[in-house]
Figure 1 (cartoon, each protein chain N blue to C red):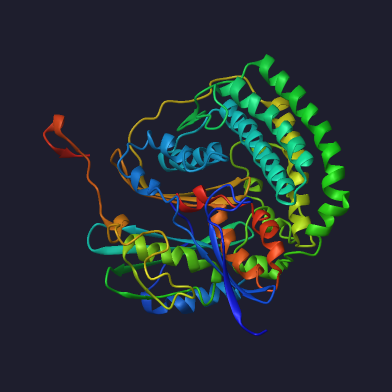
Figure 2 (figure 1 turned 90 degrees about the vertical axis):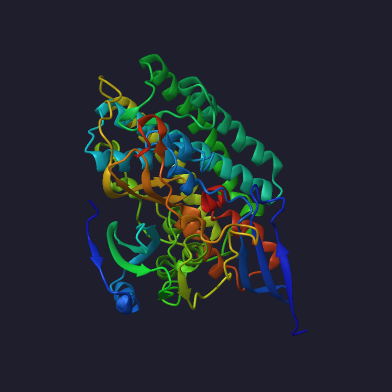
Length: 128
Length: 359
């Protein structure tokens, strides 16, 4: 359903992001989605004159992801957020909060990475 | 004196309606670096949406923010409607414009009042908020509540507006327009206001784009982009040009918001003149499957919603990027070089919403 998505390997992320900058794209944000199989999709959203483009990388939870905040400073907050809430191993964020931008010491580690399944007990425990 | 001092600005401060802390590294009276500390009102609403049925999520989404609750619900509903192939009735599309622009009006009037309060102009603050009350009264009259009006649902709107009420809305916004014309003279010409805002916090067009500024922040720096021009809801059937100023300073951002008030009044009147008769919603059948992105122009700028569903009643992921989340990095880049006394006005001109930012 999403148009203009390019799946790219992790190794070429910074090169593609640099290309977006040279092409005049604005960085909108990034989105991470836990696929439930040990991998996480990270989508980087860009805009040029209201036309969007997206880069998608699929990473394992322990993979080292280079920060794009050196290219687009606007990625600082979202990269810290993904690092905290999804446990992504993002390296070299321009301002790195070390996992404490939103969460305190007492919080769960990577609370967004867990998948929740709602089970309807009236229907024999079938996941919905 | 070459030593640097760190001054914590916030999280509790008279100009901040919500908790945000900036650690300001100062050299003498000038800022050399600003580091934000957020997380005071993080509620985990994105995670909560994974535990609710997709139709129930509208009520969660509306609680991301009290000021633009309708716009959040609109972004979510439009995304789900696209994902499920639901065609919204024409009347509902126009009703969404009317309530959406009323929300923009009350948000901008609220901001103008806060701005006046920040530089100690109490009577101007009172004038701006007095007009906001008139808009809030329309919300109550049309939806039954003033802040979280809950009129959006997937497939259309939950409530209709009668012809008599539509006529009354026109009267009220005309009345508000006359009031705004009066206070605009003060906001734009008063010596105190100009002294605090002209030439302060200049953001160039290039930097606005590079750092990802959105909404009045970007338009105040000459970027003519407004998501409404994509034509969602009924905007595609209304005359709409982005409001743009080119100076890029605090004063330019204020003028954008002032001019957008007139634009909202115009859009409301256009929508009321063109609204067709007919149903206001259609039933929702089945469950969503796939992924979708939805964007709307909130009072503070572009909001982006990403949703992924797997055919069940709950979503796998709902991601919200609010405008303040995009504008904070720009603020951090703008602050160095300014005096400590300029910080309150600079922060206010991004119109920060921390509830939105942290969700």
